[in-house]
Image (cartoon, rainbow over all chains, first blue to last red):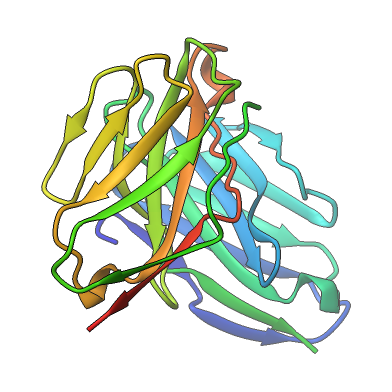
Length: 113
Length: 114
């Protein structure tokens, strides 16, 4: 969607390698989120950020770390990729006030072989 | 987090209205009711949200029960492009800045027949 981009769109990586996914926004929104989506589980929150250098864990944070050094970028890192982390990853942004909804990116399809 | 209950699936015919129900009996006073939808192979898309009063926008209408324990998303004339999974989510904005999270359930799969 306009204002939020994810990169890469697709990635295949080997087990044990580190992987970083990038979420970039041009909306200057305070809140940013990383979700993963798997068949049978729906969307699950991994980590989120409520400001520069302010992050917190979601419900499925094990094996993932995040960083946000500036407002526009939120990075998700898989320290040592495993096959269980094969998934579609979505980034989302939200303004501080509840006058607008979340805006989601188009997703990154990650395959760990 | 307050939870929502939605039917797993619903079916509609093209150009007919669709009423998607959502129960949220444990809703708190600071919970906004959000609706999102996810088309095949796409990220979720914001549809509408509200707190107490009914809401309308170009995509849909949201009818909220007087006791706020249930709500209904109304698509006035379904099209084939409305076939998607629809999520009803409660967003608590009463706990301060770190708690602006959306928790997704399984949603309702809407099938639209031509």
